[in-house]
Each structure stands twice: as structure tokens, then as C-alpha cells.
Length: 450
Image (tube, rainbow, N blue to C red; front, side):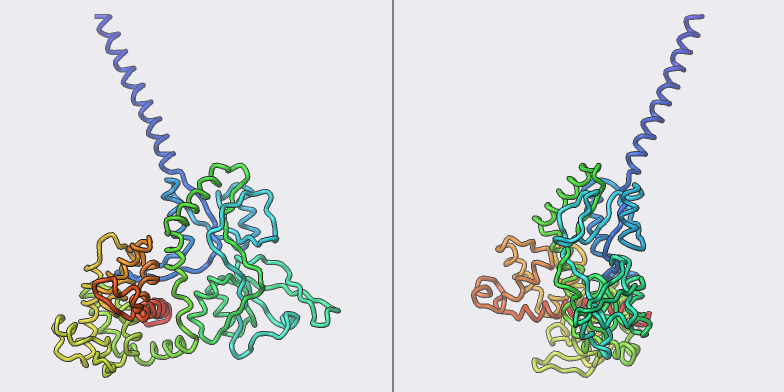
């Protein structure tokens, strides 16, 4: 009887110990699962991409940090700070694991930190109102208010007079990137200084502003870690090298910056005016068609502006008609009775974009899928497939728009179009359309009616 009792006690003790061990293992697993990397980015603005029910906002560095998260198997948490100095201090004190900084060749050295490989070239842009013009001399800036963004090093800016006998200093005021253009447009400040990518992105929404390069020195964006984190430095270098080789870095650069040079300031000014005067007439049709076919209506509206400037009576030399400029074969296929009827045109074009997207291979992901569908709308699905074949021949990834925008224009050259199934095409026009629509889409999303 005693032996039996002892056996029960031993079994109970073993069971209790197993529960404790299991609990410890669970806790450790949970801790590992919850490991995170805290980072501070450099670039301020985000880009906007078609999405249902709402457009998606995503920045270049956010995408890059997602790749880093996948590479390390850790969750990345993004923090924002008010200055570069605050970012460096946060890293020094161990509040964050990694920061992004612009490094100039022969410029400031950060001996207390380790630097990764470079992943993006940038420079400081100088932004000014068109009416005021660019100052003749840097010295003239001392009589004006200058705004900078948090990612520009906040120091006293010294200016040498043209005769080099005197110099002055001015203290810039810091604003967030989006706000700095508002301050400039409202004449609260006279000039603004911010990174090129931020300036180029935002200037599209303020067509009465201009930008120029502040100085001749380019900077390289790099990830910075503490000297003790040689393991992290090795991992980020490995990732940057990998995505530089496999094309993902080029793809990200195109995704966020590849279309920013397409429109001129007068194009943007005309578009903004049409958003106020013409878009409201057709917005309900765009919205209802987008809702019915599950396509972002802003994308179709942007495409409609590119095609006809929202003119339902538009007719081209080649016979395409209507607000969305439909061809006769496409109209017949989609059951359009009157191509000059704006509502019919919009619904048919929205349906057609959906069909074109679904006809692409499933391995083509967004937003590349949308850009290729837009190119197909312009030049035909078959020619886009030919461009994908050419991309494979050049050892480019046929599932990335950054590859197709290189090979589509080649279809106008006999050397290339004679080797593919569908022959000649004005592929360069399709690339121009995609880049223009991307810009119009982002502008309409930021400035247009909700």
C-alpha cells in the first residue's frame, strides 16, 4: 500500500515537473517568436497603389524593411524621429537596432557605428516657388525663411557673399515633408530643402513649385548599426547584395520612383483643374463600375484622363472612341452599343482591365500585375506577352514591370519584333501610358474628391 502511494506521488511529481518544463519551453518559444528589430527610416513620403476598398500606401523603405524582416525571420517595428541627431542618439542608447542615414563620400564619418552597403543614391533638393525663382546667389537666402525636413541635418547654414568678403548664417525651420510644400505654397516659407526622392514625389501635387539640386555631392543611403552588432551588419549586407543581384532592389526603385519624371508641371496643373471641373460629372459612374467589377475606380479615372481627358466625344485618327477610347473589336467583345456613351464606356473599360489582369500568369504579383494590365490596354495582351518573352531572353524577370518597361519599346524595332509572334508594336507608348496613369492615380487619390 505504501509502495502504491509512493508510486502515485512519483507520477504526480513527474507530471508537475513536465508541466513546468513545458511552460518554460512555451515561454521561451513565445519570446523567440516576439523578437523584433526596431528601425528608423530616412525617406518621409509614401506611394499609393490601387487597392479595394481603399488605396494602399507604402513607402520604399517600408518595402525594404519587409524584405529585411523576411530575411531575418524577425518582426520589424518602424519608429520615426524629428532629426538625424535624434536617430543617432536612439541607436547609441540602444533604443533602436538600425537606422538609415545618407552618407556622403568624403563627408561626415560615423566611426562609432557600422555601415551597410549602399542601396539608394540621393541628394538634397532645393525647392522654390515658380514665381519667386531660384536665388542668384546662396547668400540671398539669408534674407528668407528656409524650411527643411527632419531627415535633413539641422545645422546653421552658412552662405558666402559673391565678393567672398562676408558670410552669414541662417537657422532653418523643420517641417514634415508633406507639410513643407504646403508652407511653401502658402508663402509661410520662401525655400525648402529635402531629399530628392521626397521632393520629386511631392512636387507633383504642387505644380507651381520647382526644384533644383542643392549641391553637386550625391549621398548613398545606408543602414547603420552599433559596432557591437557585427552579426546584424553581416545580415543586412547579405540581403542588400542578394536583392541587388536578383533584381528585387531595381524592382523596388521602379515601383516607387520609376514614374516620377513622366509629367511636366503644366500637365499636372491642367489635370488638377480637370479634377475640379470635369471629374465630378463622371465620378459616380467610375465609382459604381469600380464597385461592380472590384477595381479601384481612381485607377480607371486616371486611365480615362490619359485616354481622352474625360471627353466622352473623343475620337482618334485610328477610330477609337469615347471617354475610355475603346476600339471596335473591344467594344463588340464587351457588348458596348454606343461608344460615345460615357457610362457604357467606363463600365466596359473597367471590365476590360479586370479581364486583362486575370489573363496574366498568377505569378505576376501586384502592383506589377496592374501595370502590365494597363500596358495591355494600350498595346494588347499579346504584345505584352511578347515583351515578357524578350525579357526572358535578356535574363530579366518577365514577372516584373521593371523588366517589361525595358523590353516593350524594343517591339518597335525590326531586330526584335521580327523574332516574336505578334510582331511590331509601339511599346514605348504603352510604357508612357503606364507611367502617366500611375502619376494621375496618385494625384487623384491625394487631391481628388473622396
